Amino acid sequence: MSAVFERPPLMRRVLPVFQGFDGPLAFAIFLLACAGLVTMYSSGFDHGTRFLQHGRNMLIAGFIMFVVAQIPPQRLMQFAVPLYTVGVALLIAVAIFGITKKGARRWVNVGIVIQPSEILKIAMPLMLAWWFQKREGQLRPLDFLVAGVLLAVPVGLIMKQPDLGTSLLVLAAGLAVLFFAGLPWKLVLPPVLLGLLGIFLLVWFEPQLCEQGNRWPILHDYQQQRICTLLDPTKDPLGKGFHIIQGMIAIGSGGMFGKGFMQGTQTHLEFIPERTTDFIFAAYSEEFGLAGNIFLLCAFIFLIFRGLMIALEAPTLFSRLLAGAVTMIFFTYAFVNMGMVSGILPVVGVPLPFISYGGTAMVTLGLAIGILLSISKSKRLVQS
Image (tube, rainbow, N blue to C red; front, side, top):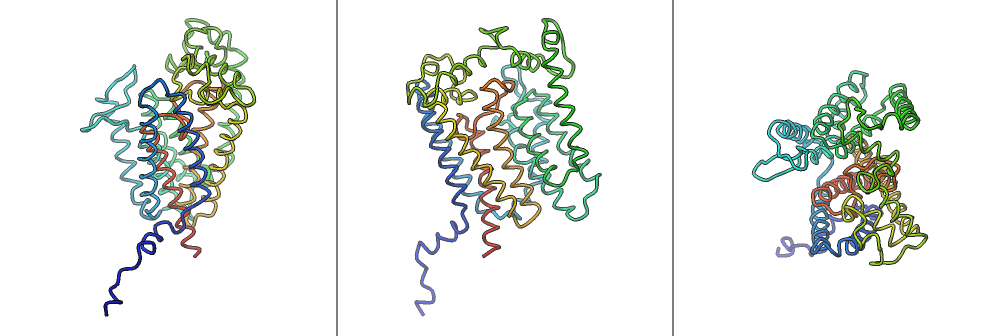
């Protein structure tokens, strides 16, 4: 009788937790985490404990990733409406009595000071994936219109703070869900063509549009200045154009193989602003060169490709839409950050995933990877 009640070995009890764990995705995250730690040690060398804090943030994100990976996608779907509702309510609270820092009202005190816009990076794709799952097989144009309203409300509130970087990430995640849900091309092409036309006109008429005293409608003054600085940073090389110019100098000076670990002059002589956060890609490029950049690009491409494969093989519509949107968040993060540091996009507050310093962003990324692992695990268990 004692054998009946004998506890199974520890390995047998732990093994189900790792069953179906996506090895390729975890390997891509491991490579990016290693690159982040190495770069942070060098770029944050004069920032005291920043390297240790970055490692701590990674451990917290890893724990959250592991916990979320154990939650089935069906359970995750139950959090969609409450999380979205709480997120939007907190954004409204920010607009009414939020905390202002450096001219932006982005935080609210609810016992602890939080930035509610970070919640929407995950809540937005969760909500839209839930919405389309409930209407699977009977989608109408009105459903896409309602989804557009659900997306526009938080994006508008975040832009009003103002926070262009986070609003761009939330918008990209929401648009990814709409696209993967089957948004008709006739609704996709007109905005894209108008955007391309706007960029062409902006570049063509830049001297007139960016003359001192000209005021653009819709955009805040700082947003207008960022676009004008992008088009010609040499107009204010020691002021608003300093970030872009120094970033491009650091990237170019890295050459083919870089100056070597801890040898970046632009980095350690403090010419690169925000070298541990938004502009860490410039510090990385200076020390590891084109070869290091190719490695980093390959790691991000592999991560994005693996995420899209998980979305393609997901067992339910909710899982497919959520995995696709979460994957596109990583694409948007990497593309926007590298683009702004390289001088091809305006400077916005978007970190480089797993490389840039930042606790809240790291936790959000860990949550996103946990969702992908959860969807991958559910797919593997269904197949088995």
